[in-house]
Image (cartoon, rainbow, N blue to C red; front, top):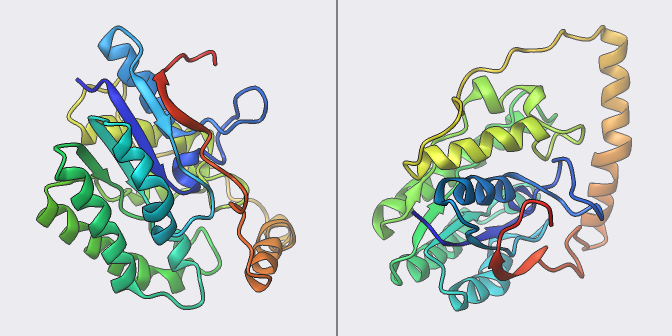
Length: 257
């Protein structure tokens, strides 16, 4: 059983899209995993979440990895790479080098290290199909890194769950509360720990909205989410600028924090 858990990565690990804690602090699958670990241990596990939205793999390596190593955890989860793939140009080899360095640095210290593959966003994002080649390439890199460094590779997110709109928030970039719940269960499965329900049980698709509503939804998405994202890229800005992780100290987890 794990007692010292550190989560590093991007907005997926920060918890965007989930129901927030008081004070509008993101909840997310990593918080949910900390609660599951606490429940199974019978006492609070120590938990830190250093993830910052918008960070690319090189930033996670430079700003989060040193703090994670200093905390002397027995478990680290890593989500990184999607923000690299979303850029107009990406160097998959460079991203792979960053992931390899993080995995080696952690496993060399006998820390159980979980690497998380990226989901296929085809059908979820207008650019999802265009991203698929990049996603597949980076997932192959993650599998290679995990095999060489002795890290644990989480299973590929199944389309029957994470390919469904119900698993995603309205911005289509971050998991919904249901998606975060399933993701936490997937991580328990990855760690070989018991789960209270099947993490990969297919989601029941909701009713398909009429064409007019779908078009209106696309317009709202471009105006409310894609437009601001593109604007930040053009200005050389990121949603994570000036932010730090939400839980920097490795402290006992309490669900009512």
